[in-house]
Image (cartoon, rainbow, N blue to C red; front, top):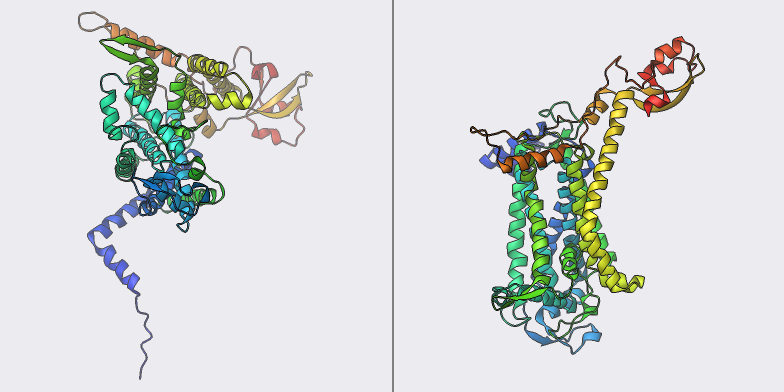
Length: 564
């Protein structure tokens, strides 16, 4: 009897063939073929997006599992669990279920801590993406929408972290909620109504029941939508590249998105996920059993918020005492209104900065080549000033710990941070612009005289000079960078009138561009007035080079004075 030795297709192979022939399969195949032809540049700054994605995956997976064991209820119960120090203590069902997750659910402690560590790392990864996009000018057309989506991701991540911070209902989170209640009540006219709406009555009210839907439904949906919008923008406009990676804005130098870049991103995603799990397994975070249950009449000493909300707490701590007045029969508490206004304006400026810069510069072109931060010193100075402002507010949130640990008077610490908030950004802006200008001058010197090789030769006349190497085309393009936009020039209207807005815009535009030096590419045979340039061939012909002809690879040599 003949034996059929033909190989039969497995079930997965047959399912794959059927899926590939479907409409969705054909579209997926076309997308994969397109991604195989699309290239993306490799740069270390691209890793922050993958880190943020890994954090989101860990948050979604661990949060989905924790959701089934957590009880979002403020109902008071008596604890009878295995943690002996809290035996018989009265607490909410929310804290009781969280303790049960930590001590009774197998792997519950690992899940809680991985969820918490991912929530701490996510805002950091998003902030780093914002900083990279800001300093390189990646927010300009056609990627302004991507900037707004990234900023929205940060705000939603902060809301998600804050809402999750309060859910365990321990003493630490209860102290934070009491601060929130005081801030809301300090808002004139509508403060009391907002407090009742948020808490559902007197503190603590039903705050757990109100925050839980925000944390498990509203925040995840918004994160997914914003992330999908970011991916769509990246697909439509492709990736921007740094100067020197390619001569043309339309030709991107890099690796294929599929499979090269996808595999690299997958490896980094797996490594980040593993690092979060390892961190959760070895480093304790959020030990709610040490804080105890929340109590409306108590507060934890030395309590600190999670790092990403520290700048909000710091803004409140820096307000001088007695900032309030009576008006229209109401008490207006500036100690609450001023920090809210300052932080709100700061976040608003971050969101609208791409539009402000485009209005000032009048540059509405599409940009696919990124800027070197040194070549745009005003923007770089603004960015560093913003970092110093944020860092000062963030540090002020720990003013009490700084005072106790360093044995410094609390008033001295607070006054120091107040001065740093006001003067720090100004000094940082001025210093950064000077540093950028110095770096531009260094690049210009390299373009004109070449780079230092460290080879010293002696001329027939007895003079010692250093041979400078030629700057190749790739490096010259990187140093020069893309063409800079010219400052906005105010022009009178048809009646010959020059509007005040146009004059202010022109003045601000000149201020934005005033510290940019346009590097001059090397002109063969053109010598500056202070340059004493000797070509390596001439040195060799004069017998000054005795290295067997290795100096032929150098393009030019200049005197020490000329190179300086």
